[in-house]
Amino acid sequence: MNFASVRLVTNDVERLASFYARLSGVAAVHLADGFAEVRLPGATLAISSEALIQRFNAGAAPAAANRSAILEFEVEDVGAVLSSLGIGVEVVQEPTVMPWGNRSLLLRDPDGSLVNVFSRPQP
Image (cartoon, rainbow, N blue to C red):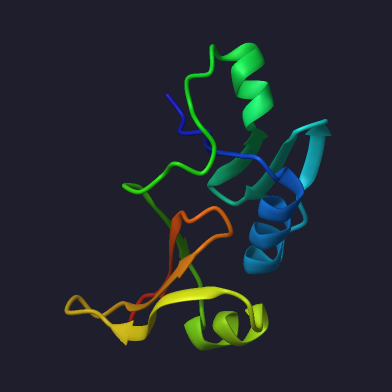
């Protein structure tokens, strides 16, 4: 079994895809009206409109309702990522060194999902 993707359900696919493209530096691929993917090494972040979920998945996932999962992205330089995002991004926790040594920045995406951008300590 391979882990393929995480899918976020939204009412604004373009806004959410633009946020993750800006965060990752990887352009979103729009595969259909209301569906996009940000394809990263190791996994894909899929973004779907709530209308598609209602139509094809029995309405199983409401838009912008995530409050328990954290999307995590490992980067070389947390500060550089924060600087590249510019104003308008909700910072939950400024870059902080965690007890296990990672430097972590917590953000919220435009739909309120929690995003952890972190770097591991250099040996």
